Length: 224
Image 1 (cartoon, rainbow, N blue to C red):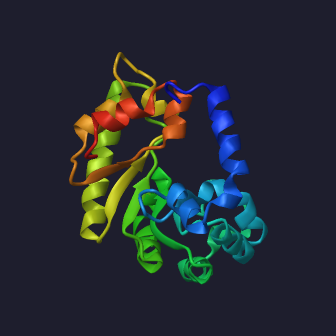
Image 2: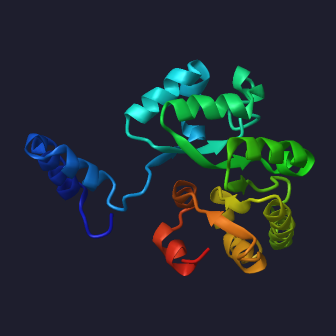
């Protein structure tokens, strides 16, 4: 929080909370969602609740005000050893839609999209996705050349998913914001990928874990 002290922030928060009886529900909704866009969450963060009681968890999350989910593949991301790992797209879609939650994109691990491409494409069509999001190949992250290779892989994959009716996105972790060979991997990915084929889903939490400033990178590449 630039220019705002912790004490000032907490004081303002306390005033807001104690003053809540004087605010209409419409005012609260406006303050919570100034862009008037669906408020979403990532399924990775809800994995424990979804594994414990799938249908109930969706209803609970909808009750919190969430309207959309950034889905992750249940073949990984902490779901792989649960009954959800083999759940059909039809079952997933029915349960979340019944709770009033929509989904436009899903993140897959690198190996899923390269070793089981046709299967994941069918799954994505059944979910009604618009975007397929890819994680990096974890074995190729040590050098600048590794990241140039990653960019080439994204361009190739981007062409494939575009032909199949999707937009490819890339989800970062902290490693993209730690220099290798004097270069920043995230910058390499930006410069080496085709903007028409590869979009970026920037995870500002992971970026911050690497000691970087989110606003710097968001403003550097505003169209990506």
